[in-house]
Image 1 (cartoon, rainbow, N blue to C red):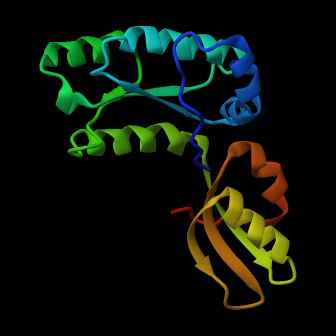
Image 2 (image 1 turned 60 degrees about the vertical axis):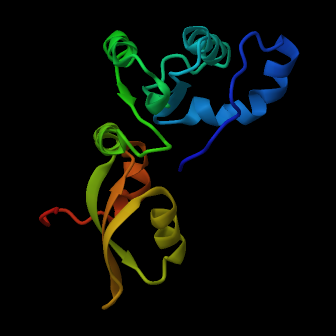
Length: 176
């Protein structure tokens, strides 16, 4: 699931932070946070600190985070971008306007999200449509075959859901 939360404003009044907490609860549940920063903004450093403060307040400070420096097309000094890439771990630099850096962003997303999934083969009886629907909702179905007495799937599922699908996981088959 991908979700977008409200943007952060430097020195956001505490009562507004409280009002946004319901919206921000999804951040606490996230497997990976994308922290998008306008690298061309003169107060980018302060904005990064403001976001980190709010993340601490809502209990999401320790979550895996990929920082995305956007608007690199607006930065005249390439050294600024390089310095920030070196300064912050797990970062990529992109330009949403030109598409520059998107292959790197997609590669980094793939490497950070993929380990959080387990590739399994499942055999689900057609009499269990709720299981099939759940698999499609929470997993990444790679292959499907509805022929025969049961539907067969190859899917990537979050490890914490292994027990839920364990009765349908086929053991001894080669995973792709």
